[in-house]
Image (cartoon, rainbow over all chains, first blue to last red; front, side, top):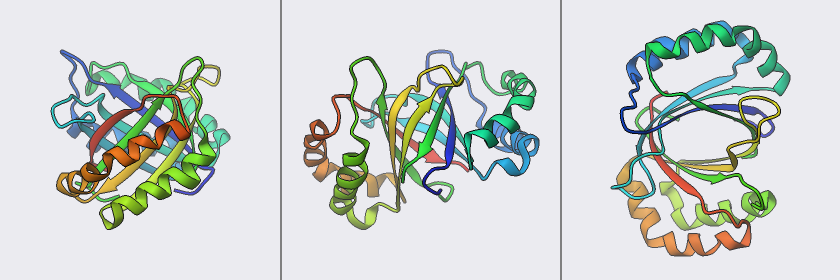
Length: 107
Length: 107
């Protein structure tokens, strides 16, 4: 990604009783979001949590999904009108309430 | 990044009184880590936290640094012997104790 781009991370904290359907997420949810937001999304990445810092420690997040935009305006204008539709899909793949972080790409 | 790669995220939680010198991190720390770990590191990315889910909410993490490896073995073999040297540099740019997440790239 290029310096100055906006990265929107959706982080799904791990925990007892938490479930996350990675197949649905990768094959249904992320493509749906991509379709809704259109060309504003410059890239999308998904990671599955394996461990924490040590091999025996649990991962902080069961999954992390990241969307890249050219600017905050592009993010706001494309995500805002579709937020309800996107959020409504969450119960189809997880019982986790995600945390969102908006960042600026430095490197 | 390619599916199956290992992403090691170093996450610096925000908080009152927390400091983070992004210039030092990008221009000194990350290059030092890259030099120590050598060819095992396939890519490095850095993001600066801007906000949480809403424009008024604080970012969860002041900064996120990510290293990509071809496998857990490549990560362990290159990071392990250099961990002490890398950790010793932290007080030079932050008073935050970072959280580490090891993930598998899905998309």
